[in-house]
Length: 219
Image 1: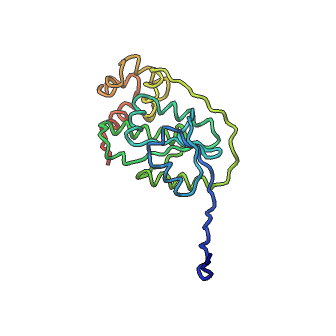
Image 2 (image 1 turned 135 degrees about the horizontal axis):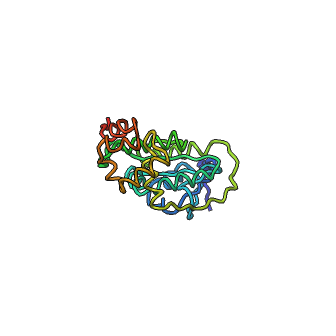
Image 3 (image 1 turned 90 degrees about the horizontal axis):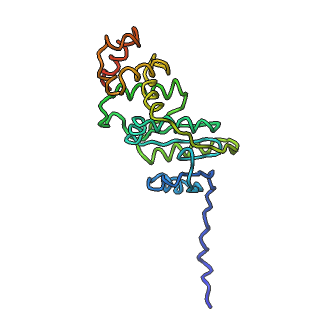
């Protein structure tokens, strides 16, 4: 047998494994798990009761713009954001351009985003696409933190709570006023179409601000 003593065997390149990321199995249809693997992360797909991604003690809820709007309307997002607060750290990622959606009531959308940041105090990151989302998740995983011992549980919102939550996204509308509005006008559609003078008995001087916000353009 003849050996080629002049050609040295190529050395294997070992890349350091990055922190493990636990991913809800429903995210497998996105490109994010694959991109995280390419970044040399260990990933585990499993059913998560809360959040879409878990990195040590941080829970991440990811929403595409379409899913964000749909879950805002049906109240599901409120429940999900309450649930991720069971973790020491949490983050909402909104993926895509909200200005390009077909959602007509842009003022309700604005009010909802304000509520998430100011009222619920949930950090929110906007990303262009799945690749940028994966980059943010990867960077977050490199932060030093200790594993969480939280055992998250699902919570349920009634239909009444979902309707109240949407109204509470608007400035100066708290739990009491949202209930009064719904009791009097019955549906969100009726409230949004109501005249200022008919809202004044409940909203007082804030009725003008409410109507102005509904009629504002998303620039």
